[in-house]
Image 1 (cartoon, rainbow, N blue to C red):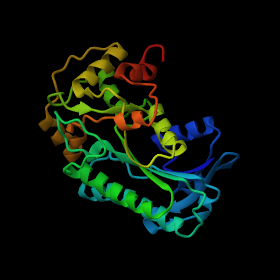
Image 2: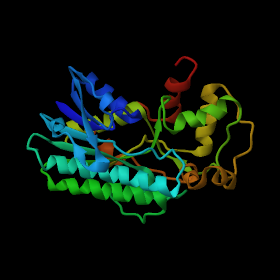
Image 3: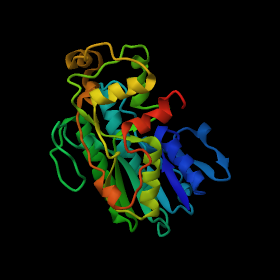
Image 4: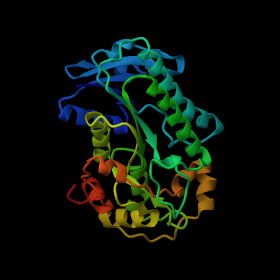
Length: 305
């Protein structure tokens, strides 16, 4: 099997590449940096520029599945200009892929799997969200994910399966939100955000990578939540991180108004609450390695890790 991956050099992409090679899958990847193009036995790079709708169509040669992870990070300050970048980077990447696919024979491609996010669900302390229900979209993140998924849905015009993976908080010590949460806790400066009651639906990065490959090998179709079975509140997550690190939480909860002042609109990331179900992917037969937050954190930050 040969898989084309966009965003292969990012946090999630690197883990998926590692999982591909573990399963003896060859990888083609797209990069906007020509100096990052490698050509080794099972890892071949190709140039593209989504902002200019440019793509080397040789990237599709002998490919049987595509994984799309491309998109600017949401962890930079959300200025009006950067909000446009967050949205356009996702939409332009999909449109460039589609324009490239229209120029080649796609009969060998069986699956197109695109990243999405649980941010499409409106913030709620009480709701329990499943994929096949429709919810009112609220806030910037919700609007971005809605547009992202709508663009991914246009790939249903091809004959292959189209899958959207709604990703929760990724548990990794190599990047993303978790290391930023760990840093202040290490120095006894961490605390829950706001009330601490907001739900955080999370997933260990290795389980996430395996879900993408599972969607391909099992020829899934449609939308799936990529979260573990046991969401936790922000307060519980903070306490569990401290416990794994052998630290104490000494400070009072950090007021929402303070973080809004420091982070601006990006503070939404810290206070949105989505309690998300993984029932659908479980019913397909996927087996999680990390189902509770302690088992996920210990390999990453435990004393024996």
